[in-house]
Length: 427
Image 1 (tube, rainbow, N blue to C red):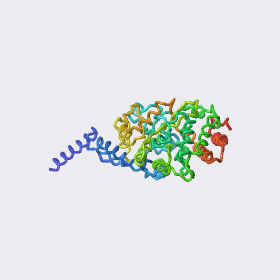
Image 2 (cartoon, one colour):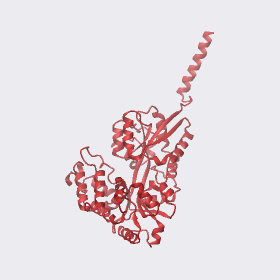
Image 3 (cartoon, helix red, strand yellow):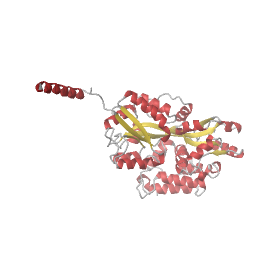
Image 4 (spheres, rainbow, N blue to C red):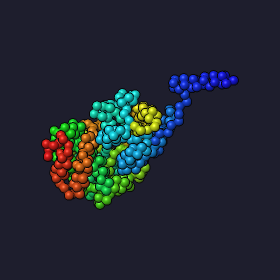
């Protein structure tokens, strides 16, 4: 009897080993957490992760966002204490690269399909200098000016084709008792990222112009930079009274309630404005260049997803990352989150008309580029002022009338030249 029992057990154990080796054992159920700075996107990601679960029923992905201003610090703390999510949104360029260099993000150099699904340019913001990828690009965002079509029509204003026309339209609105622009400076990033960094591509000549600064061929106080600061000064009469106390959320509401005719913002706000601006017709246009200059569009590489190198479920996490390369995911994110644009080589059809308007900016412009300071210029030593902070401070000073455009450009140049090697000749 004992011999028979031993024989049966041996056969069962052997069969189990064979099945496991062949990959036919029942897969273990796994739950992955996905960290993000997008607290507004819970419903959209529920739809996305549900679609993934339908393909991989043994893997559940739980979307777990953090308040956007707290995301970087919270994620860093979680990773340092080994309590981080299995997957998480990774910011482009220096911020994400530092986490990879610190060993917190798993390498994706062996992830099937990543080099075929995304162009080298799309991968670059989340790759090492040698091209080793560490996150899957999921979304780019565009920039523009939302505008109240009813207020434009009531005041006989057409969508302007030059910066000078835009300023003339703003004066006409002001004369009619309408606040032209909703933007303020209480949330300092707003005036920097969605105003100044919309203007800079046209001011400096797009990608080639920006590369000239990064390569040390142009100084950060040249006439093109001065002209962008001058455009900020041009806006001073046309922003809300008390703009210093106007937050980003306040600005969106000023526009949505019809109290301001225009709102510099990004494509990510399509959904929110759809919910809030229901009493009038609205659309979007790109801020036109100064007369005689070409318009270049800010189309920014915004988000990728990487895997926590310390995750206990790294294989399952990489299964999810590989699914992010599929046309199914590209269509899901493009249409569940209008204004977040897939970065795959094959772009799906988009159903939202405003999202398509944003995408059409890229076709109509001379060229497109990312936000001016994102590449290399935010990587200052801790005892120096990085380009983002310097630009932000000087933009606000110009809007307040505390600095002239020339003074602001000189201060910006001095801050960057103090640490950025290629700009050292500009001191």
